[in-house]
Length: 93
Image 1 (tube, rainbow, N blue to C red):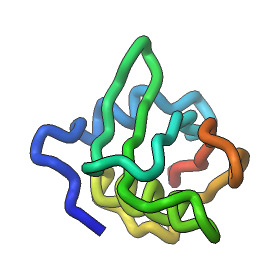
Image 2 (image 1 turned 180 degrees about the vertical axis):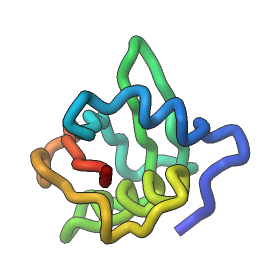
Image 3 (image 1 turned 120 degrees about the horizontal axis):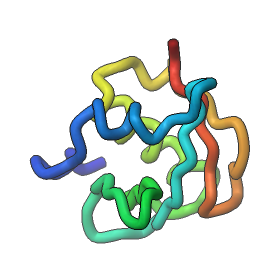
C-alpha cells in the first residue's frame, strides 16, 4: 500500500468533520492511482489504491485514516457501508 501524499489533510481537519459522537462519513474511491484524503463540499473523500475485493479497500481506508490521525488502525471501526462507497467510521474518544 502506498504512503499518503504529503498534502494529505491534517488530523484536526478530519476530526472537525466527525459528528459529536465521533462518527466520520467518508466517500471512498477504490482502485485510484494514489492514496489521498480530500474535503470537497464539506465531505471527506478517500482515494485508495486497493480494489473493492474481500474488504481490501475498507482496510486501506482505515489504514489511511489511522496514519493521518496518528492512531492505531484497530481503534477505528467501520459502522456502516462495508460494500458501499459511502462509509461511516467510528473514531476513538
